[in-house]
Length: 277
Length: 168
Image (cartoon, rainbow over all chains, first blue to last red; front, side, top):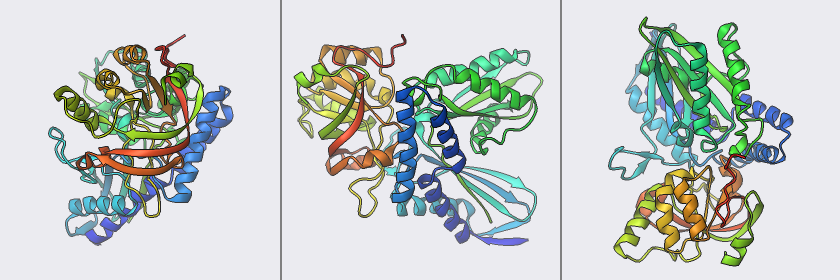
């Protein structure tokens, strides 16, 4: 057994919160720059320019990329050969508080979803998974709620045609329209169960852009991206080519009686950071 | 912003705003409208005021304000007619508005402006001063008075009720 202290995990989570919120992912920045180069609509180009400039200012001045520093989502892939010494869950939430506080991020979490009093930095939404080996992978994804509010789930019949599924995904982007800060990255989860498809859609956002799997999923992603970018929603919803930067699909086996499809949209400020201990 | 200036602004136009704006989002809107209904005094003068749908981050050391981009405006739609009726003139946010909100903007000759969405760090550079005004208990949703200079905006809905989001 390899021992890892809860204190080490707390420090790592804190560091990842700061990195994710202040430094835009390089793959996302590259996609934005390539969208800027391709954009012909003058206003859309101006907005993409502002988005790129915003990332620069955030990085240089240690400011949050977006004031909505999200509900922190933490993915833990825990190697079976690791023993965490101390309270893992509490270490994660304390790490969130430490990171968010020290970088002056936003306390966007209400302790009770119904009475909604007092804003806090934590808790995070935490997903644990078991992995092989003796390492622990920690990923922090601060998810803003402008885009999280546009999430969709549909339980299709197992005999559904692929065109129906495509329509659902494109319609989800249409429904988000200008509200969720396009250009989007569209995360899609297909298969599993209702909860599993939703998780896959969220996890799809973590995939580095340009690293699409080969085969039918890749083809589907290309087709959907092209369909979405014909919607003319564009940056800020004011028209243009760049409605989405990418469509990322993750799949999983499912039941003979169903075909769950979940869509999780990210705004252009797709933020995440990972570390392996 | 006075009524004559607002009348001149056309949908889609780019403007640079200098002056005072007040941040207010979901919970602050709920409280403002409740106060209006009960005839209570409001924490700031709504007459000809501009509200910015924004909840900034905490303020980093040495900064005037943290990241402070716009939040989704449509969540405030249900409160907008009552505020316009009470004297509000302008709103700054992101995204489309409901039919009812557009109709109220037209009726009360108001204006809806769009700020660079998802660009909180950039927007913070146009804020000269930030002062807390009310509802401190709401944390990031408290009302702040912001002094802004040359804040870049796009006219989203003009005082004639013409919206930038209407499909041609």
